[in-house]
Length: 224
Image (cartoon, rainbow, N blue to C red):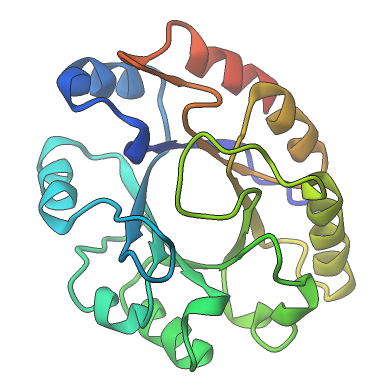
């Protein structure tokens, strides 16, 4: 199992813009490690996500590292215009690129950690040829595109399968990020299955008026 300490990646698509200052104060106070940025094009997933102007505004506001989740067709075009910095994560979907190795190579040149993301219906063994060229796997626990969904029924089984697969391939050092319906209870179970980065959204830390009181501490305790 990955020995990395557990980290929280706060899903910024779940923020209420009217409470942004309070949200950032809570994220900083809670020592959240990443801001999770869902970049969507309305084609790879049926939704439009966070825009580049918003992302650049966040860069000016915080020193927290970014966790880019690229849910777009032809991610190479997106990589050219992202403001990527050391310490960031870029998750590229296996399903989004016809030349996934080339896309991984282009992402690596930006100096961030590169994760390969897989949808719930994508088998773990699809990673066979590329698993040695990435820094981690972003395991989607819901069909991507919308907040507030329930975890797919085989979510824990898939996480266990991924952990075993990484051990079999002798790459158990790779980080596992889990994204989608990460409640405290789910996070606790997924931590036992090898996950080390937890995307926190409406299921855990965000309410209608920003960060829910004590929610970051509760999630932190669940993944300790």
